[in-house]
Length: 301
Image 1 (spheres, rainbow, N blue to C red):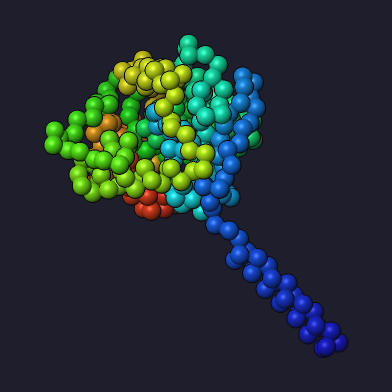
Image 2 (image 1 turned 180 degrees about the horizontal axis):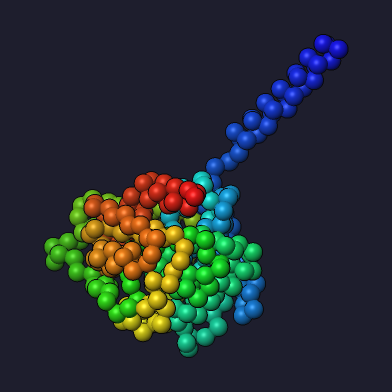
């Protein structure tokens, strides 16, 4: 009997050891190797990239942007604690463009709702960056049952009080090697961060420039409508009932930091984190700290 028990224990130990070994050998998240997929919705297809395991986290990019605007290392950092879905708006990448007419924040919001429903992700965590934060706020108001927690990066209120969208670098400032210099501080360190960012997003094997003539003007019009208070949901921030984390860089020249602070004040249960060394692209410049904070916020409570 003792021999049999010892044998069973030995086998269990071997199985458990193999299980631990298998878990330890699992590959870390790798956004660069993740293929671009599509999902069918009633009006067409939505293109997306998915990385990681855990609760779904849907990323809504800034304007003009695409799923290739998110640095792979940023996606991988978030994917260490969530299943991250980066999606393209209408007319970008592999997402269908219905029409440039009535191309509004509300329509992009309803598109996002269609995506969440199509992949059965509800209630999903949602993070919106810049223009994406307008869509994310609207989503939490128009489709509250689809959102569990909300993260707003470099946000602005939609009630007409926003200060933003005015990039004015010093006349002597130049930054070569990055088309995205304007989302980083106008300093030597900021330029270095911009160049590093540019190199990172070009790591995608199917990298495509985010500017699309078909929708760039339409997206800009939708952005202006939000900032000037012409979107109904922009006046309803107090109705957002889910926990919210807001973040920004203190040197943000596009949507100045007070815009994010005012969003955090207007939304109940909202917290605010500011990065003094960063600007509009703070989430990429301070990637390690911000991604850690986001995952802690999403996975606590």
